[in-house]
Picture 1 (cartoon, helix red, strand yellow):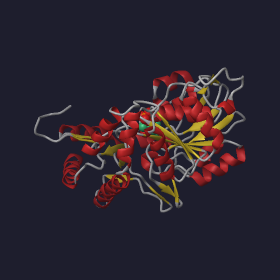
Picture 2 (tube, helix red, strand yellow; picture 1 turned 120 degrees about the vertical axis):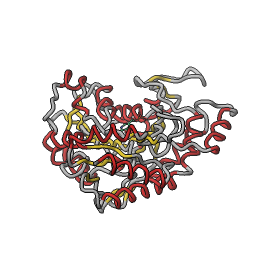
Picture 3 (cartoon, rainbow, N blue to C red; picture 1 turned 30 degrees about the horizontal axis):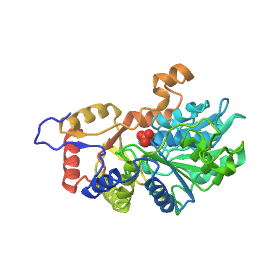
Length: 384
Ligand SMILES: *Cc1c(COP(=O)(O)O)cnc(C)c1O
């Protein structure tokens, strides 16, 4: 809620839409196609090329993209899929959409990333896949995770909603898992309003993703089961959805994509300023990026040494029009998961401890240096 008309409202994240973005959408609106035109494939190719992967399929949201990736992985009734409790609910919900069972494995004690040794303990005969989450933009431990997956014949679906543009041991996010899911929600690196994408190097996954995106219907003659009745003929081969991105959204995505390097650079600068400032602040710590990876800095979490101060700090900053956020309420805390899957507080101590102490500070490309300094000034005041 805005307090007064004169004061600047500083959220934890916000999109940056330019006149060029608006113009790009207007051009799309005036074109022949509002959906199923040339811009979505162009946007898919941009993201695929950027990641250095062969295939990309756009979806109407990151959540739809996660659903599609689970479908393409063959997740179905009776399957278990392992994911992190320290994430947005969509990372686990996508498993349920396919009839599978989400199984949580705790995060590392030092980083908010799923712990490979905890994954191993949760594997059963029913395990089908692992969904690591690149929390805050920091890639998960993909070498360890892929080794486990290979050994147990599991698929890896990266929830990279936070980490477009990040790298791990010299490789770009998008190349680290069987399928990688991005989101283009307004708080993410680049936006299409709502939108998502799955990238993969595997042609079979690609075909299943394409099918799922459009009702499970194909017009590809080579895939027909029956004989074609004529040029109008198409077949529905699986139960799919209408999960398409529109041309207007792809136009915005293509225009936003031009700024992706600039956006990443700015997020990194903001993170670096926070980090250098927090060297001398004893009340809190922050996430230390391991030397083998880079973060896309989707969020900037701080961890309060004294967890009883978190709510007070959140409230006090809010009164200064600085709207921090808490990422995340652990998924297994939600009533739906507690009632249906009998998860309880205490099941995942590292995720729970992280939640208790976490606060996400403003970080987004449009945040100016003076706004960030204002945030830091108020933060120090509010900590007292
Ligand atoms: C944003 C987000 C999603 C879902 O993306 P939407 O585009 O909002 O549907 C999934 N997982 C994580 C970790 C996210 O942050």
